[in-house]
Image (cartoon, rainbow over all chains, first blue to last red; front, side, top):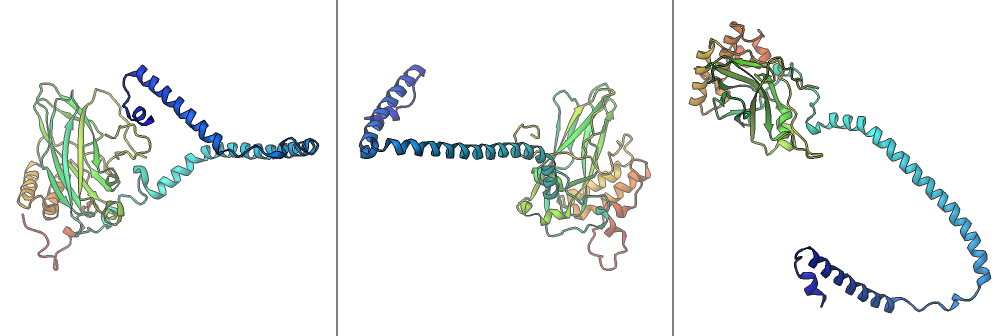
Length: 251
Length: 95
């Protein structure tokens, strides 16, 4: 009898609430019915031994009081501990992130000398795809000159983008980039590129913009990167206003 | 994409390039080298390993024309192209 009430999909608001209350009421009555049958009959010794009950209850009360106190102190200590932990979490998390390299933080050991000493991992061929975007109000024509390039970790590679200013005014652009998949971004090291600095294009001027980069050889040893074969590098150009100072990303 | 306010998910953090930004080649001084490099890529189905000589030439052109800070090529990862190749004769393709 209950099933059709439960199964019916909820209609508009008031109807649904009426059905709901009816449901709850029937459930409640049925539950009461079951409970009354289950409960054991009240014990016989209920009315007997009031005196012992009185003495017992006093010492019991004292015991409960002391127990409550200890419980409360434990809870208070736990609360204070939690607050302390939340304050300590900030430097601890930072340490953990640096050690494990999660969250895109710079992996320890990435330095300029590595370029000199690294050896290419020739077995692992990666496809780097290039993407170029402009902000809606940016009038440059910006596109990559190659759709993809095959590199191996540990080998420096060069890629080109082209930007053209079709308008009659000089336009200053500034770009940022993005690497997908995110975790591969920490292995993607740019030696030199055209991002994060203002680039000025005169009217009707077209320039080639190179990106000189390499993939860290440790990419091959990371188990999370074992199935990554394609990395997409995406640049986006925005228009920069005169004298605007943008913060350079860094650590 | 990196601005999605998803708590706890990793977001991409862009990093500044190691040696800064390339100055723009307004006068196209190294355009010929770039064309050679692009042609090499097209001929070799975009395999970077085969066109490292051309990329080295392009960067050398940039350095000669003050479009790039002069650096020993070994520091740019071209160490293997600098050595006289007695045993690497069949490694690098000719342009």
